[in-house]
Length: 172
Image (cartoon, rainbow, N blue to C red; front, side, top):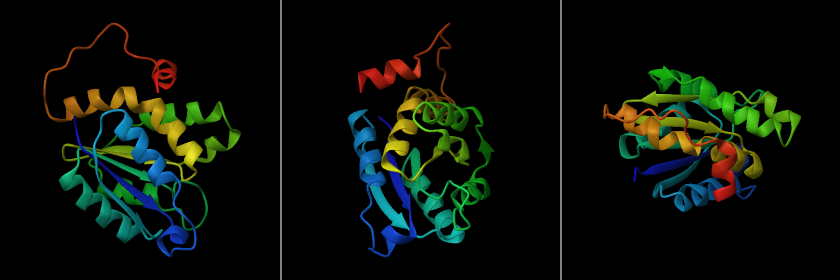
């Protein structure tokens, strides 16, 4: 299975003022679904630092997941960092995450999360709240393996109908 890296973007967690709940929750969901997490780091809400972490993690892991910094607060710059390092954006993935999040809270509509490719790695932004991060990731996990296979340039079947997010969430 492809390896994953988890980057928590949070000034307060980076400074040790708040425990990181999202990173560990995301890492557990990934591991439970067969994605070994080879790195888990916390960085401040600084665009250049986030960009550097994304590039470094993408050299080691096929899936790079961020949590935090996707809202509209002045220091939320994870989408800008992601846009700067990714070669191609995949618009449908964050659309699916926001739709799943709206089932729990209207505030999911404020997410500016992105998904894109960096070499043969997939970069996926998740919200900073543990519940929002897990909901968003669970919604798109059925797509991740398929996307990573395509990124490698390998042949993959295109079934008439693929797994639906609610099926994946029920199985977790």
